[in-house]
Length: 168
View 1 (cartoon, rainbow, N blue to C red):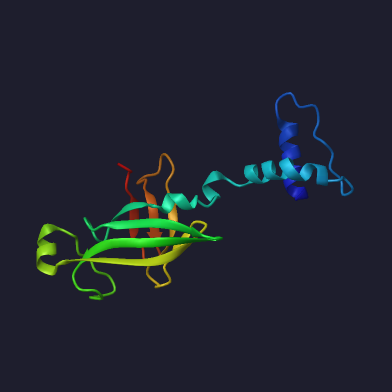
View 2 (view 1 turned 90 degrees about the vertical axis):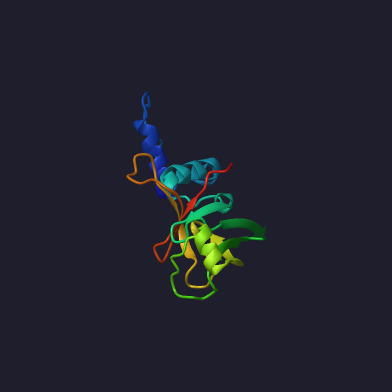
């Protein structure tokens, strides 16, 4: 806490027109400064990109690079301190036909293999989502302006990506 306040004091001292920074010593009473000062110092000390996203950003439809044209949707529900993710979507082919199925939900594949729907739940904690199945565990990804191939969505631990679709 003292280090954060010292950083804030240094920033104030370097600001244009500053006369001198407040002097903090081991005996400086910090309780009066703890409220707004600590909150401001912590907000400034953590870059925006490092902050976990709001749980509401996960609630969306996605494009799955391993299953083009198949539906992928996450809705969220807050249950006390927990954030529950409800996954829902479509695939083609019978359930459990392999570790990774690279089938698109194209009209030909739907006719050949039939379309099936699925749903399961997981949990969101900070910038992580996990369904507990060893496959659907990943992190929220946001590329910043100037990124070579920018995308926003979920990077799964198996390397797959779900790209967040723009709301209509």
